[in-house]
Image 1 (cartoon, rainbow over the protein chains, first blue to last red):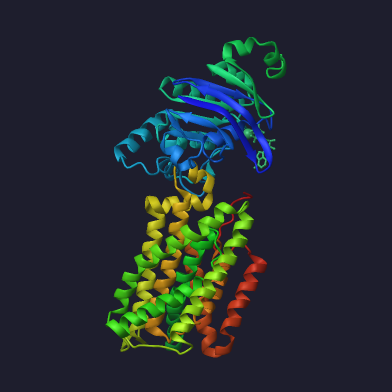
Image 2 (cartoon, chains in turn orange, yellow; image 1 turned 45 degrees about the horizontal axis):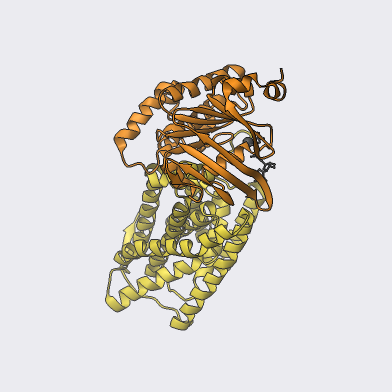
Length: 234
Length: 293
Ligand SMILES: Nc1ncnc2c1ncn2[C@@H]1O[C@H](COP(=O)(O)OP(=O)(O)OP(=O)(O)O)[C@@H](O)[C@H]1O
Ligand SMILES: [Mg+2]
């Protein structure tokens, strides 16, 4: 479904990603692990079109997308929920959700998505008329994910969805990720919370200093000596 | 009492014009981050265009204003797309873009102003339209001024509703708050910012058309309007559209009051308000404080 081939990404003169390659198949949960500054956010932002690789290619459903601006990539039904979430704090929850489907003409589909989202996140229905700035941290994270889901994306990318959440909320978030996959969404999730991520993921990659150093099924990764020592602290 | 009403209504008329111009500048600077110093020149262009339509073709100024609105919107959009978007993509940081785009708008200012000077010279022009007087709240006013007030307020209200309820208005607010999040929601931010710039030009032209109904116009009338708009922008808060309109009304009222007692001091009074606001509430007087965030 998504195939990343040898991308090199720079911030001006500083190289952040070095020949990164990986794949995501339909209906998979792929996790990408890495410590601070490894290049996880850079990877997702490049896939979303906020950054462009200086070389290499990104194919999504038989289309090369590495040069596309991000609003076009969004319309191909790739959604990114960036680090800290993307939402508009001066707007109401409902307005945020409406903007998540910006540009889609089919009103029936919007109402359908909204219903679906309210089922997954009932809180958002209750707080629809509130300003997003009045939500709690966990509710904001839900709103950010929900906004990304409004278009019913084929590929949902989550950048550290558990960051800053209480332990209970973390398990809740990963449960939601699993639920979304079961409903047919393909998910690429970047995490520092390796234990949880490896428990829900199908396959995983390790990113270190801008390079992919290992890729395997999550099951194998959980057994891997190096992963156990450096990522799971066992 | 009559004097009081006279000042209030004159102030509101003037204030509505200031408000329109300031809202336009707010869309350009508060949302699109282009500090367009040529903004006042578009007021002048709107005034002269309306003047020519009336004196040469006999077309009703209010009709001209309605006709020039979409034209100026498109012109502004094209200016953004061909000039400022180019500067935006070639500037490495937001600060660099603000600096470069302001310099570019200085260029725009000189081009427009010199063309106007070549065309019309320094002479003042005026025409009379709806110049009979009408009683308004018990005070006699020239009908054209009352019409300008109503049109100004109507434009502002429709503009407010547009921003609040239309999907494009929501996209504009989203792009103003966070361009990156807006992109990720599928909003073509360059297009939306271009529309904001175009709407700014449109509001300036509308204001210019209304001014031409009431006052003498000259090729260099634009700059004072830019200065007033900047003062109003600070007063109402950057990015705060309602604040800009209310700020415009306040400056209009103050100017009208000072005008009555000491005409030479009216600009001084505006500056004084500006300085005081900058000192005590640099975020603007209509910006609500959100607890610590
Ligand atoms: N805007 C930027 N300008 C310059 N360098 C940057 C920028 N953003 C990130 N970098 C650099 O790129 C590298 C990768 O950063 P990135 O944000 O992708 O890391 P990350 O894996 O997401 O880390 P974290 O877990 O802390 O979010 C880091 O060395 C960082 O210093
Ligand atoms: Mg990151």
